[in-house]
Length: 254
Length: 264
Image 1: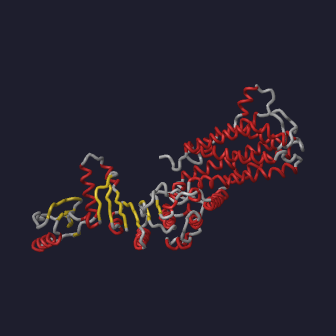
Image 2 (image 1 turned 135 degrees about the vertical axis):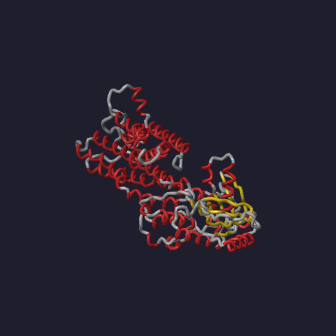
Image 3 (image 1 turned 90 degrees about the vertical axis):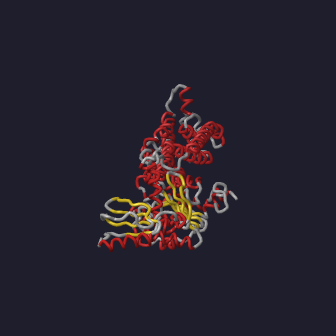
């Protein structure tokens, strides 16, 4: 890592890394500021406590004891520790799990800033839109094995676009480009290799027959498509169904 | 690349110790056990016959035992296991802090209180008619060895202690092992074999050293000071070896069984 041996050169390496664990704990009787000061005292070249409080929008909560914080606030303190040493390599294990949408945006902004500042960020996440928004490089992991690697565009290539709408009778299944038609949860989903062509065909058919397509939605392939098709493929294999919840995506950013 | 400074940083340890002290001071119950309880045995000096060496030895030995067990043993054990249970240790170990620094910084507040109390006991006892320690060097060495031994016992006990609550129970074996010697040490006419075995328990060795180092008592049935400064060193060798052996054993066992995260 960074040209160093993680065991033999631990001391040097740790001063250049920031780590956020999936779950970690704090002494509830210390305040936010005290927790940051404690950590500050363990680092070789720390950023100041006040700077970190501002960066994570924790100024208002600085003198509150850790045990009185919400889950999202605790997570922000945790992130403040991970970033306090100005790390070149940041490892974030599910940084936004349990955060409200606003805090999640904040974390995304922080991660983008880190990347723009030249740091390498390794994130694991269950949120597809997070991986899509942040990652330069993705590894899709299922049941402990990496099944796809590449940039988001590379990974999505080869997967179909989708058009979906509330079920209507008589939809033709021979529109140009259509690969597969799925009826599920009261909706019809058309999978296509040629989104524009298929959509034009569908709209022309609807106009000709005076059909209203409620809840019409057309989209290019997304990570969700890839992810679900991997999950489906696996589900049909011998794995028990609960394994489908263990998918993880890892995005390494540079 | 690995120098001593990389393996153990005194600056970092001092910083961590400071916050561990803050945490101890905010936990009323733990603070009572660590700082107030150990002073209570000195109260027997008020009640007992003024200046009686037997009363003095009883009070100081009991004080030593309580100091070793509460600010050091029980306190270090419960602080360590609760930090482990709360995943604080796991978080700390992702950073630059080294394991040895974490262990030392958790032990130091209790150890500091313990050593301070062994010093404060001297003027209090003197004011209540007791003699000053015959051999202060031996007395000091006993105190340092005792806190080291009971710190090691604490980290060993942590191996089978789930959380701070469980420590109330898991600490019992060591508390009994430590107390049995001082409790039975002065019983007269005990079979030699039994006395021999008991004298090799950690608490017995500790109280023998207090009787020697402070009061100059020669042997378990002595009731008055007969030894001088120089004379106390010879008889001290045996109990010092016993304490060193227990300390070594506890360190080896603690190192082998150390866990940093709650058991899954």
